[in-house]
Image (cartoon, rainbow, N blue to C red; front, side, top):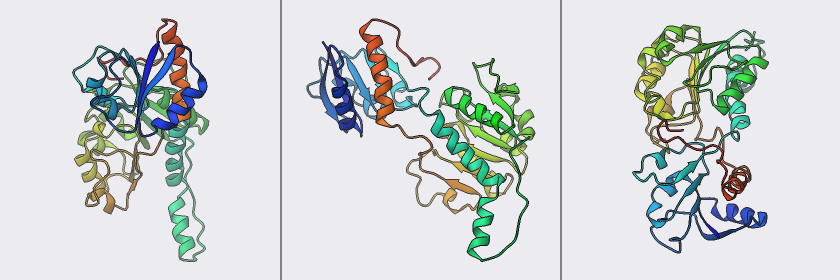
Length: 311
């Protein structure tokens, strides 16, 4: 009999749906909304967990063989020394939410939505000529399942797609592939920069002052990936000096973003609260069930995390 423990802020919701699924040879042993150091978990071999909670609770699971993450990012689990268990992530779940987020803000700027809001507020009739996404160039950093959805949508808008990726090289939605070493040279082509990279040693600090200074002044930078990919100080300096049009930020080195942080004061910065794509328990449980049935049959699991590359 496989024994499952659940560690998540949505633990009760997960437990109810998994119980309803009546999965064979599985018993839910413990359900917690916070990290634990001990409990009735010594025989649990499967853990469904928010990575931050799972990472600091591993000592309570000596027989753990498989951990299913509830998040797309699993960095906390990669930072621990223990590596004798399989980690599976969440893929092909967040693409639709993320593309809506990205294109909501791209259209916000191209269609001058804030300007029309200001005109309405001041009761001014002043028709404007809006820009179009057609023919514009989007630089997508990270071409996993989410990046692919963004690239696909960009082609519906007849945009040019540049992609920075270490693996995918055969994508019909991409017009040009760029290596990390080429980004500064290609920066002046980008009307929009969309950052979707995971936090890895290779990606950390990739978006630096040299790259930001090479972008055209009308460029909008959208970071819905990981904050560590961007040199936050360099981005702040770029925005304060208005070297680019704007930034849309969903992730930060410190979260919640402190009230005294300069980002809050910048008119050319839009701040969202790490909400570009939300883990919905229904979606996560569907992925867990798929993987559990594979686990039960001794088959390879989906979305296994490669500790060597970080995703």
